[in-house]
Length: 107
Image (cartoon, rainbow, N blue to C red; front, side, top):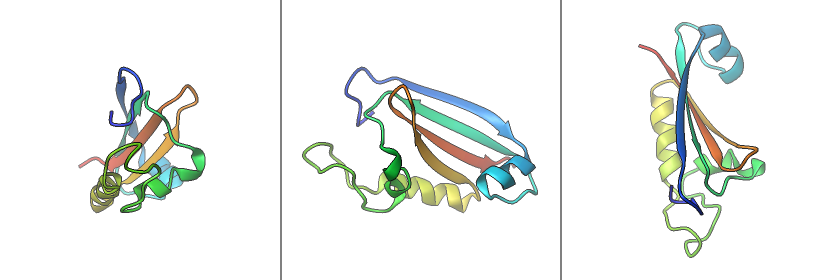
């Protein structure tokens, strides 16, 4: 929502992921089922060449005058997901905005 240029729209979806699919698509252990949670927005989006860089601590794609922030939010999210033996990534939505994908094991 911080990076929205219009009225923010957030969509949340979830779907089960089989152990085999998690292993093939996300390089996760295939010993349990997973859930994939997708968070989509209509914000400014992200260029494909930066989708991996946004999870690095203190990495900012814009200066503080353009968008406030410290550059640690997504790095913390990545650490939390990895501590739970999951996977997180971002992708640009063709219609604009960004989709954050979080894959977590089901307990």
